[in-house]
Image (tube, rainbow, N blue to C red; front, side):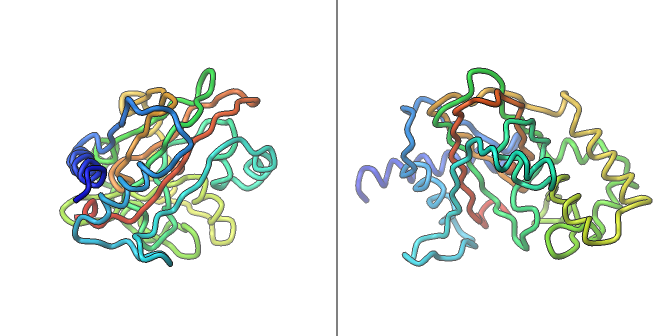
Length: 252
Ligand SMILES: [Fe+2]
């Protein structure tokens, strides 16, 4: 194994160990700020290559990695105001705590955000551990959230799911509301359970809040932690690189 490969593999092992236990996220610091994505891509794939491997292969025969540059896009601001969907991530407004790829049959278990340029103020990362939030809910609300009745994308899904020996969470209020427009609105116990979940997520006691500096990368176990973001200036040149990958090793 070449030196670089060994370093990536060793670091990936250390990251995976952290991602498997509370608080289910880890920040990698001390890197020189860069737009380059080679290191984080290699780390994501190295973690996802840990059995059981669930990520499909891309055209090059590597584990498929989803990548996006997240920066302000004024056209998306108007879209987000009208549609309440993931266009929000390209606005400067606050992003409520959520999990990514909530609408997918198999949401990405591993996501990462690499800060290239941070905002001059605001834009802090917010993270909450799913288990703490779930445990704060009444049993009746938890029961409602386990029912596959919540419209996410083209189908209805449960917000709380049993994954391996743990309860995992898929939740994105904005996506849920967007999907609800094409189906019957939620009411009764399901609506009450979502309100209770939102109330818990808004409690600072459950939130880790920290600025991500240029060069830093936060890796998040997307099935066991929710993430969000504070608002930042409308004229900011903040640039974030977002990575997502299926990682079966985080689903067991
Ligand atoms: Fe997100």
